[in-house]
Image (cartoon, rainbow, N blue to C red):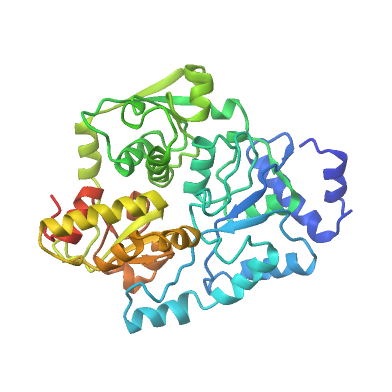
Length: 426
């Protein structure tokens, strides 16, 4: 790898042994993927994926201590994924014991390390750090050192920033050094589409379901999606961004997509159009039947397929402010239609702390509370990692949560029916 004089000096120890190790780590990481150089991280803030104080992550805490002791702190302030715990989310005494004593016993200790390392603020715990209320929204063309698959794909696709799908800790290394290896989605060539996905549905496709279908088909490749602007329009307004947030999270978790282009809508697609598509691109057509096939083939891993759901999660990734308002309105209509005042299944909506504060200032907050829904900033995935929670019948409209846990997927309309009326949500 070709290094600048400054990079070579850091590697040789000009900023101490610890910084030299950080630089060496980044170089080794880049060389695995054929990177010929390192490029500066240009974003104002970073985003780290590792937010949870798992007892088993002893090496992470040791590494953080070494970095802090050497003064090798993040070159940027950063946000981090959601906290794994919230006392307001339903859990019995035994589940709480497992959380506190056997799983996340190092949470307070680790959060102290994160604060010393450069955490933006006490509210910067969310997987949707790019939401306006959070304040970590990179600009088009900026180079990032992020991890968290749903955040990376959103930054690349909707915002036009540049970031590879980094792993936890590598995100921090890039921020500390101020450089990342130049390969993959940082390059013009790496951002070209090798798939053309043609949307031929008769109605607006469910965001999470469409993203799932595309992710499982193209895997880590870049898709150029044609026909979705028919349903979303040509402006990245709140509704379109919320849709693409959930769509992208599904492509990234059900597959390994780090970037997608939506014809007529996302920045690079508007700028370059079909020039983004490589000549030998494969084609994938999606109609109503294809989406139904994908949904029908999801595995059901509940011990009792006919069990009554004990919990519902909505918001993985975290809900936006407009989504919270829309869900509140739809809940009220759904409950009124069946003559009920509160949801019939314990339900948790999750959002970013800063979004929750903004929502709490609106009349919608009291209206949502009346429905019996709990509003939390927890990470549903981290909650479900508790084996005593994972064994429960939990439902969700998140394909990411479905993929990584035992939660059962339903579309948003089916979820609304189940939590207001009960039954099969059909």
